[in-house]
Image 1 (cartoon, helix red, strand yellow):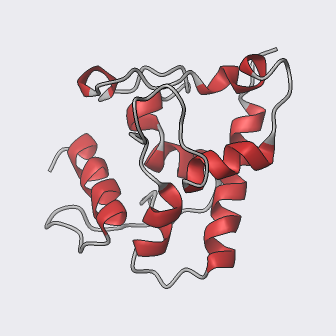
Image 2 (cartoon, helix red, strand yellow; image 1 turned 180 degrees about the vertical axis):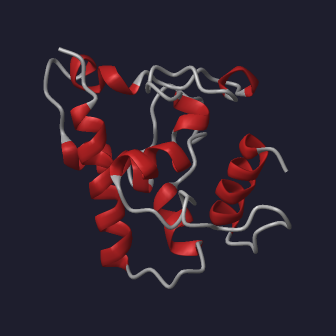
Length: 140
C-alpha cells in the first residue's frame, strides 16, 4: 500500500475506532502511536492542512471547504494565540466556524477510539502537545 494511502488508512481507522487494514500496520514510524507535536500534526492534520500548515494538504482539493491556514490562527484572533480555544476546536467542543457544519474530524474522539486505551487525561495531553506545536507555527 503506498505510504499516503497507508497513512490515510491509519487516520481513518483511528477516527472510526476500527482495526487497521492489511498493509497499514502501525510501526515505529507510525504517527498514531507517536506523541511529539510534529508527528501528531503529520498524522492527524497534514493530509488536509498541508505539511507547512497552509491549508494545502494532498487531500485538500477533494474537500468541500478549503482547510484553514493554521499558521494564521493568531493573526485571525487579533494577534493572540489562544491555546484553550484551539484545544476546544481540535477536541470538538467548539465547532469549526465557516465550514458549513462540523467538517473537521473530532480528534478527541479519534484519540479515544484508537483502541490504545487512552484515558481522558492522555487524550487531553496529546491535544495539548498538538496545540503547543501549532502555536510554534504562527507567522508574525
